[in-house]
Image (cartoon, rainbow, N blue to C red; front, side):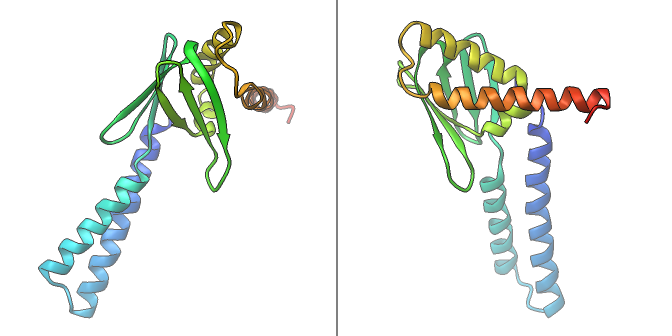
Length: 163
């Protein structure tokens, strides 16, 4: 299972980088200052924007959760989770750690938009808590569970016309 919105986010990253490149090249062309060196710099700048905006592809399977970026993949065993921390800030993140040393950062919005990924994470986290491994983070998971229930109820009400 994987994040269904990943393709849309990837296309948005490509569009943003393409728009920036186009605007920079058109500005240089309009001012008459376009040169090979400057054009190369604009390509590099657009490429850097793409790298920054490139979304992580989150996938899950039997007792594992993975996040793949451009060059590396991080993976945790959900049934061996030892901590789940909610890192607040500009962009909230969940930091998951397992007993084998695996570490993954994931955007909670990915879980909200993809209930099947949340189900896999929650299933493994419950097993880890029952086994006494998950000592830190049950509150964060409970808060996300409440949010998931609220979003599910909202979707049901909206689909049935009761919103």
